[in-house]
Length: 144
Image 1 (cartoon, rainbow, N blue to C red):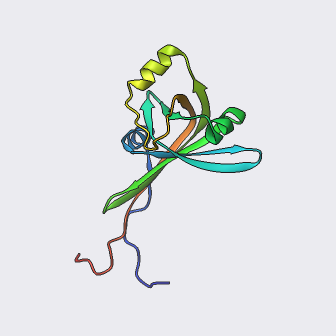
Image 2: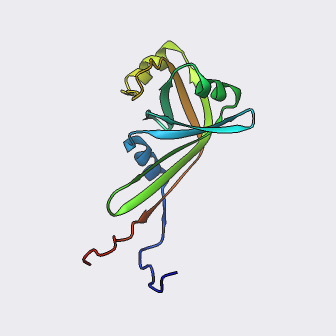
């Protein structure tokens, strides 16, 4: 272990508003879901709708797992040259297909990266939102 003291400020906890802003700004997130005793993680393009998270998907493993067990964790993270952060949302995911809700979700501008059609919609309603950020260390050899 190095004898130098890390003089960076301690990790800070993000306010709920800061967490929602980071979620809204993130280009993608990850969903952790479980079914049949197995945990899976899926990347998704998403949008914030009020204080919920909305994403598009296709029929398959992800949608099946969310249908079987709606409790999920959703995570975004990011880093700049000076800071890194992570935000985790725990909540319940549910597919929705009511015409008005779908039309509103389509206006959010979610564009999936994957080429397959994503015609199913899922909303995560949070039960818990928390995040943290910290200053990144200066790179070795940088002028200070």
